[in-house]
Length: 78
Image (cartoon, rainbow, N blue to C red; front, side, top):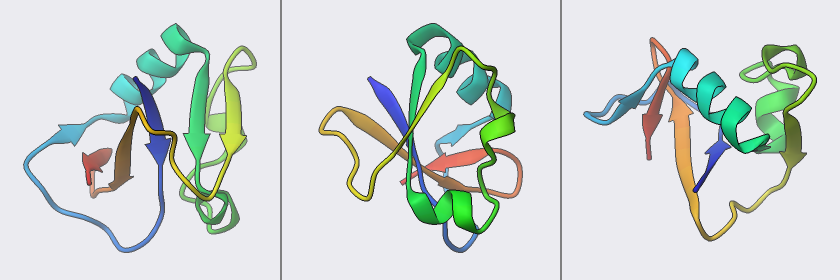
């Protein structure tokens, strides 16, 4: 399973993922998929992740991805 980080309005929901959990998962898998608009509007910055993590910019999430939207503190599962 990989994470796909999106952008847009702040989302609210019951399933939350903290920034630290996203970073920990990225370090373990070595890759994070990001919507290009999330980079453009500053939701995700390449410096948010260490050099060993590959950021893959794609408009469509991979089939096994957990899609995450920005939340007030961290991320929420879409």
